[in-house]
Length: 275
Image 1 (tube, rainbow, N blue to C red):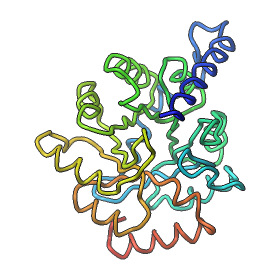
Image 2 (spheres, helix red, strand yellow):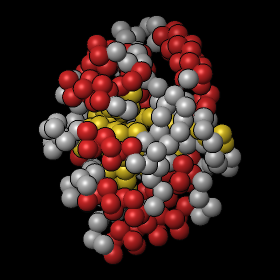
Image 3 (tube, rainbow, N blue to C red):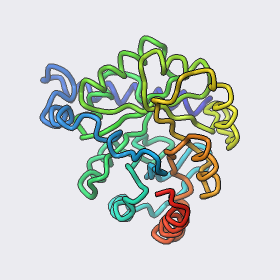
Image 4 (cartoon, one colour):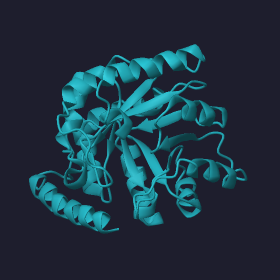
């Protein structure tokens, strides 16, 4: 849990600086970028195809569990490569946390300049300032981690993001997290196979989650499988179990030839009529 504490402390310092930079504004992010976002409301979710496999392709340099994954990461080049595979890539996730993931908020703008694919800002967003900043960057969707937020705060940030024209992916790690997500009306829910406390990964976790959630009405929700997605067979099997959206980061970032990796996936998915 140590890395989470450090990240959140870093975020609090970051927020203080943001508030200072926005001191002449009515609120942080109250600019044309945020206004423009409200005009493009729902852009990320609209790009997810029903009845087909959708992959949210991630850009991240490092992670707490692996350290540096790609020391030579070229964000612009990676965005352009992802853009060539719109047959199954529905959006790009950009890690903007600097301490453990080697990201920067400005990376959202860099990616937006290189592709028309909608962008998810993946970070540890825990207050209004970071939501406003996300809108100002032109973010199409933000990540909110249910386990890091109380019910009231989750609802407040969710509603704020929606009012600014952004979609919200609510990440859950158990039944309590799911209840909070459903209580606020979340329609875009991520199931993370990674335990945030010890960083262990269990690719069967999502199956257990689906079994435990059978009694809940989730047919109108878009469920995203996060972490441990490394092969097409896993994607196909989950697709048959009702999951059609997958977030893949480390596997792509560690590839020696990203374009070939994506071409191979595209071919396999096309052969089975999954895209």
